[in-house]
Length: 104
Image (cartoon, rainbow, N blue to C red; front, side, top):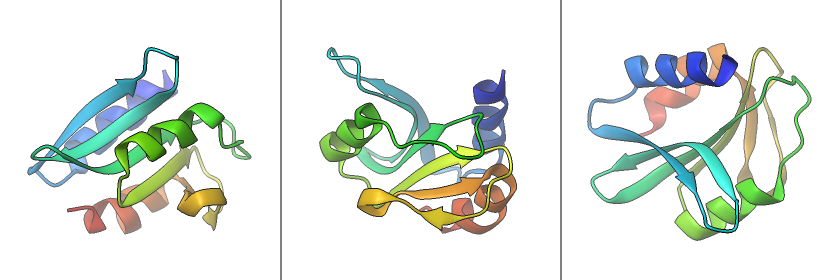
């Protein structure tokens, strides 16, 4: 699946100090990947197959709960652009090359 592929690419390329988790609340809000350093969430990542994704209320709720420094929606090959509440929408290649190295 697309989500599995993206998660695998991030797991292989991420800083070794970061741990990769899935996050879901009892109310159903979810985040596909949370990158954590120690006990601090540093990035929330939502994975979408669409190159024109919508920001879900559940993802916003997760970012409000976890308060990460970085927030991304990763697509197969969309242009990179900002969305609401500091979320960056970007394609997988741009994320792996440009953004993932900055997450520490």
